[in-house]
Image (cartoon, rainbow, N blue to C red):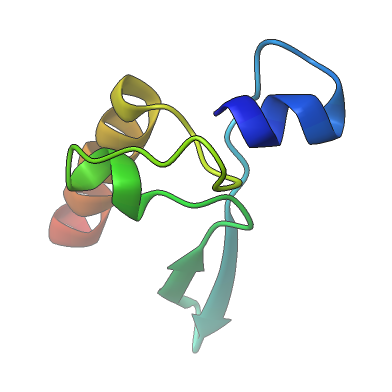
Length: 69
């Protein structure tokens, strides 16, 4: 998160998600900030990404929302 925090000049970065709906159903979820490094447990200090705990929690929430829709 170092590169992302430096770019936005804040220590804490709130996750931001965007989505696409098709016939009233959410079919695409994406984030302008990287999540894969946190999911793979291999953060990159130069990536514009969320930290490991934030990306894992967000990923679990996305997965649960997809499964329960």
